[in-house]
Length: 353
Image 1 (cartoon, rainbow, N blue to C red):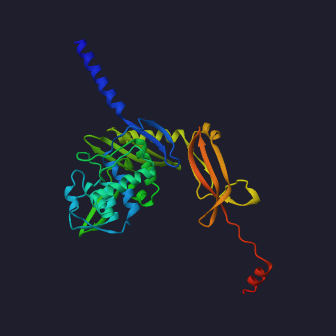
Image 2 (tube, rainbow, N blue to C red; image 1 turned 60 degrees about the vertical axis):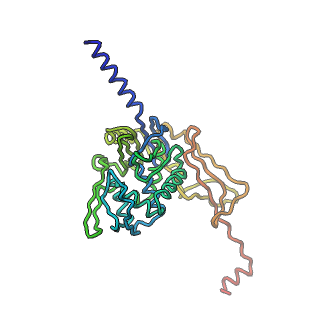
Image 3 (spheres, rainbow, N blue to C red; image 1 turned 180 degrees about the vertical axis):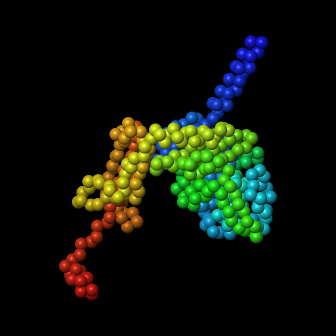
């Protein structure tokens, strides 16, 4: 009997170990892209409906939200999670994006793909091009919805965090992904959809995200949260306690890190020849432990010969790094000096000749 109990416990332990080992998690600073915590962050896995974050971003990059979409026969191929749209009905791109992100409508993903690119195949090309431009090096996409019985979408928690970081830079995406519900009228009907992302209701600092599930991918979840001006992204794969996991991760890392303004675009003080004013287009914030602040390096490389760029001089770059990892590269500019007026030109200007 004792041997039997030992065997059962041993088997259970190894099963748990295999499942736990396959779990992938990450917490990323949304401002800098710095990984604050990670487990198996580069393991490539099926991602289910978290795919729809990329679908939404591609649509937003290539369509206007007030464009009208007439639903075609492509929705007849949809199954699983749906918003139950029908061929011949008309919706705005905005309506379908809410259906895509709040209700995870696979039918919405197909209609948006055809509207945006003319075909599912064309849209998939845009998906992969967009993913590569973001830096998602270990990702591949073959459909706009995340179902994996016929075609597959695979990524890593690191790549999906990069995707969420990029998506959250889009104001329309931020508004939609943070909505707890959406109510609108179309086709002589009134619709009211509630967000499947329970973290928005259970955790007051949550700002958005997308859940996913298939039998093969198991539970996938990408989310974002903001507390005391600190912006985090969390991603987890193969975790059926994803809402609890993300909340705990957020609370832990919000407590460990503080947000520091490392570059202030309105107060950039860099010595330069001839006393010219130098500036950059953006400020830069980063989450750091107090012990890390003095370790931040700011390296400035100025060109021998400035480059004319859009009516100003591109004079060099500034690099912000920590422990030899560069987290931000900023272009530094100077205004093109005005040509000095001659005495005759000055007299003519004053006389308005």
